[in-house]
Figure 1: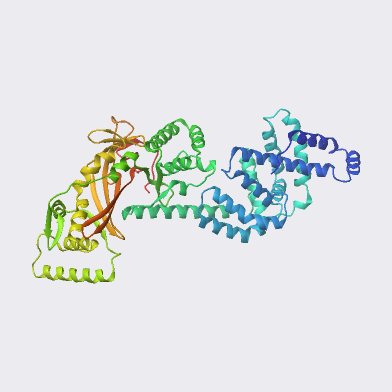
Figure 2: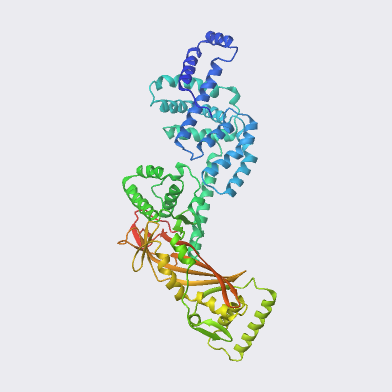
Length: 587
C-alpha cells in the first residue's frame, strides 16, 4: 500500500474544486491531458486517497492487531476498486487472516475460510464498499449522515470545513451518484443500514430497517444466547463431576488479538476479566488494557484495576515462568499456573569432583549365593526407589531370568518368603544378571545404590553451586527457596557398561524474592533435581573402569492462581483472597 502525499492530495482537491462546477474548463483540461485528468478521474483519485489515509490510521495505530497492514491491504483488494476475480481470490484468505489475527484455532480458520470461499464472492460482488455507500445514499437521510461524518473527521484539522465540501462532492461523483454502483444486493442494503445506524447521531431519524434484518439479528442473538447457555451448563456439569479442565500455554491460546478484544465491559465476570488480563500479557498489549480500564466509571475502574494489579503481581512472582491457563467452556479462566524450569550446568570444580568420586566401602554380605554391599542390603530391606531396565538382556539371560522367577514364585507359595518380598527378590536377581552373576562386580555396583552414601557424597557439593543460607535455604534464578531433605532414586540399565543414574531431588516447600517473605509451595509443585550418571565397566575381578558424570541441576517451580466464584464475591489466589465488587456468574 502506497502512502498518500499530503501536498499532492491537497493539489488534487484544489484542482477538483476549480473544475467541478465549470464544464468548459473541465472539457479543456480533459482535452489537454488526453482524457487522463478531468473532474471524474480527479474525484476517483481523491476518494482513493481518502481510503488510503484511513488505512494509514488503522495500520499505524494497529487497530486490527499486529497484522493490521496485511488485513487492510487485503480488505481493500476484496472490497474496493476491484474486480470479481479479486474477490474470488481474496475473500477466503482475508477471513483466514482476520481469524488468525484474533487468535482463533486453525480448525476454525479453515471452516470459516471454506464457507466464505463458497458464499463470499456471490454475496459481496465486485466494488462491495462502493455499492454499500451507494445503497446508504439512497436511504432517507443517508447522504446527510455521510456528510456529517466527513465534517466530524475534518473538524480537528485546520481548514477542515473548507475541505469538507469538495471531498463530499468527489465522493458523490465517484461513488454515490455513479450508475456503475447502483445495482446492490440485499447484503449491501443491510450493511448500508447498519452503517447508517452507526453514523447517525439521532436514532429516531433512522429509516425502517430492511425487510428481514430484524429477523436475522434476532436469529443471531438467539443463537448466541443458546450457545452461551449451553456453555454455562457444560461448565456446571464439569464442576458437578469434579472434572478439572486441561491447561494450555497462554502463548498458544492467545496468539494474537485486536485491541478491541481487550475492551472491558462494566459487568464483566472475574473469570472473563482474568482471561482478558492474560490475553493482554501474552500479546504484549497491557498498555491497551490499561487504557480501557481508565475509561471505566470510578467504582468499577477501581475494583478492576485492583484485580488486574493483583493478577499481574502473581505473574511477577515467577517472571521467567511459562504461563499456563485452564479455560472453561464459557471462555473464562478457571485457574492460571506459572511453570518455571531452569537448568544449571555443573562448574568445572564439580565436574572434577565427580570424576574423582569414591563412595564409601562397607562390609560385604551374602544373599542366596551372591555378594552385596551390606549397607545396600540393609537399605534395600527398608525400601529403595529404583528402577531396573533389563530390556537389553539377551535371549539366554531372559530364559535364565524366567526360570529364576519361577523358582522364586514356587518358593513363596511353599512358604519360603524369607527376609525379602517376591518383588525385591526379582529386583536383586535382575541386578545380578546385569553383572552376569559375578559376585565382585555385584559388590562394587551395589555400593553406588545406597541412598545415604550418595546423598552424603554429593548433597553439599551439588547445592554449593548456589548461594546458601544453612541449613535449608538456596538462592537461584533470583529466588530464595526453602528445601527439604533430598530423596534419592536410582535407575539401572546395561549396554556395554552397567549404567546407574542416581538422582537427588530436594522438594521446595517455600519460595520468595527475600528470605523474610517466603510463599508456601503446593506438594510436588517445586523441586531441585540433580542426576549423577555412573558407568561401570565390569570384569571378573569387579570393576575395570568407572566413569562418573554430573548432569545439569534442574529447578522446577510452579504456582497457581485460582479464579473462584464465591458467595462473598472474592477472587482467590493461592492462599490469598481479595474483595471483588463485580458479580461472578454461577458458571
